[in-house]
Amino acid sequence: MVCPRCGSEHVTIQAVTETHTKTKHRGCFGWACWILLAICTCGLILIIPAVTNSKTKTKTKTHSEAVCQNCGHRWRVN
Image 1 (cartoon, one colour):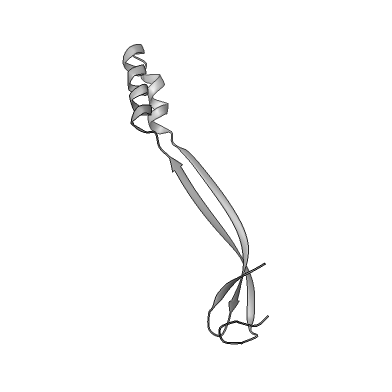
Image 2 (cartoon, rainbow, N blue to C red):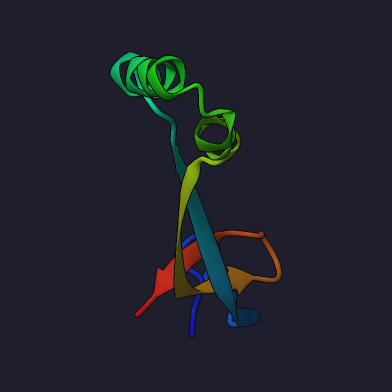
């Protein structure tokens, strides 16, 4: 494999893992519903899990990258 930037053949291939985390929080309507439920039923047991929990989605993708050992240029390899 040859580096497209400097033309060197001293290239290594690495596996790169990308992690994207997205946290979904409740909006105003969701909070208002939980507060109304707590007031109507006087149930603090119902509102504590709603306040402490948030939903988290994590996506992981792995791809290969070639790295030139002379100039440090990186590019994706299929």
